[in-house]
Image 1 (cartoon, rainbow, N blue to C red):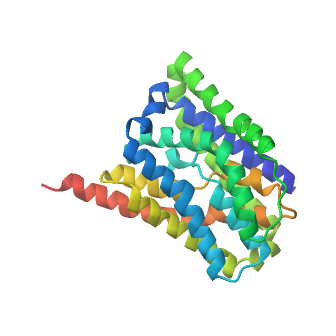
Image 2 (cartoon, rainbow, N blue to C red; image 1 turned 180 degrees about the vertical axis):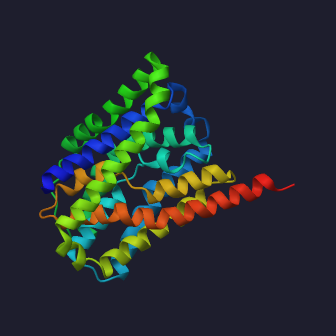
Length: 282
């Protein structure tokens, strides 16, 4: 059952990435590269400060090995294919798309490096081969993305019609799979409700604050970077979690999907209220 749910999680993320490609253009790829200051702030927030926040939490809070492994997995799994679904009302599509593409490319190199460096600090054992991780990430994320871009180029009407539908459908499958995974392993989840969930919520809140602080003067970019820091790459996290024995790390990833909604939804409501207030200001 668990293996089937993991397959559903991976497939739903693949469909999400395909849908992102369907809703974008090749020109959008270069958006963030034309803004070097935003590029540097985004990389600093997603790939340096958020993992360091996880390291700090592990140093301060007494955690089980499973919780440490789960935080390690989520901390290094930068990238946010769910962002277009969350940020559709903020007019930051090109930034979000280019950020997703960039994070997927960088993950091929940085995820194995982060796992190797951080595993000792988190006191967890893993046997991830960087070359294997790189190959799987490339096939799992870059291929659906390029397929979506090519389909959009060849059949623009199809892309316009199906991008949002596929995003919605994949998002539902992702959420349902996570809830079923939690229900299937409810005893593991109950055991994590104390420090496990607290550390997870603290990491997400810290990620929101980091992204919001480094987002720059544009309100939309600030919101997009904040949510991108708190929205970890679920498909990538499942891939990394498969290197750890037992279901506990994977269950924590499923718990993250729920916790992410708990943290992100109030933030997005606040940002929408701020945007509406600014739009109505004289």
